[in-house]
Image 1 (cartoon, rainbow, N blue to C red):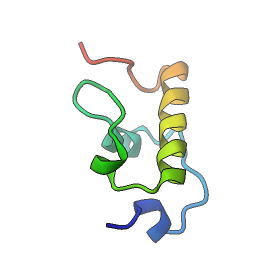
Image 2: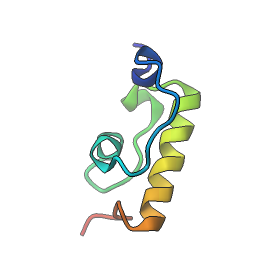
Image 3: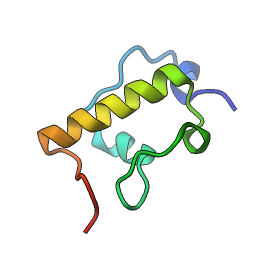
Image 4: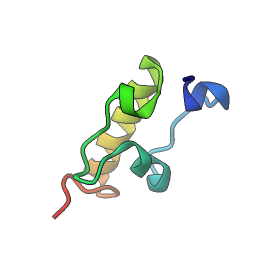
Length: 65
């Protein structure tokens, strides 16, 4: 399985694109692991950083209630 972002030659991951970032979180709003997402190490770190920043800005929830 190859990385989604490497296939599309994506340079940056936009933290304001919450719909695509939701694909990398589970039902409890936890960040999914690399095994589940299929991302390479570089893009997994960037996705995690984008999710954390989006949470700080209030665009994504910290936990599901």
